[in-house]
Image (tube, rainbow, N blue to C red):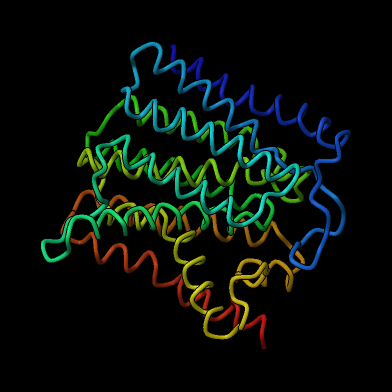
Length: 335
């Protein structure tokens, strides 16, 4: 009954808070204005992610105070998530330079690793431990950027978060992992659903960095938590994050090859190109949801039930996304 009450509170408080924040953002001028890299034609309130982030952080604090959630996870999500949310919201409101963003992401990645014993995400006997830890740190920084990059079409980042939570819950359940962490992921999914009510295409509000940085950090921290605790493998996480990771990594590598200033702002992701060509955000978002549900979810279950096929499951999760991005991503934009 307690968890049902918390779940209802997660959804209701997020939905009501988003409605109130949208009015506040309009009055305060916290808007995403159309420019060369956007896909909307009029100003929209931004920074709405601060609502679901704060609601979830409050729930984490309650679980930690009650002793239900372990101290390390409470510190990692509570403190790190709060920093990500506040920093992201400041960026939504006044825009922060790229160096400060990278420095903050680096500090957050280090904090997530330290909270869970500074263990790397993988262990290979021929690679020195400091190198493994450095690569793990870089992967977490990249994940935060990857989630930010995928917030370019209505409903994409929020619906993706719901799937990631659901898939991680399935993995933990099948692996008989931490029950409280599993339920906490359910609360995060409900928070994102409460926001998705207003972010579903055509969106009336954008989550901004206060939401995308928070989600990228949280998923990275949860990945460290479950891998270090030997509950969910890295291969399974590569499946769960298959679309987001595959799209952003392939897009970036392709831009390095075909664009001189590959590091600059752009809108050449495959999903952005198709949303522009089709003039329809909903079709793209629904397509990605179906990919998550019909392809990545079964592969997630397979990778947990048959650990030996984890590498194959990860390849099958990433392969279609890589091909899709090569076909409709930066090369299409530069054609």
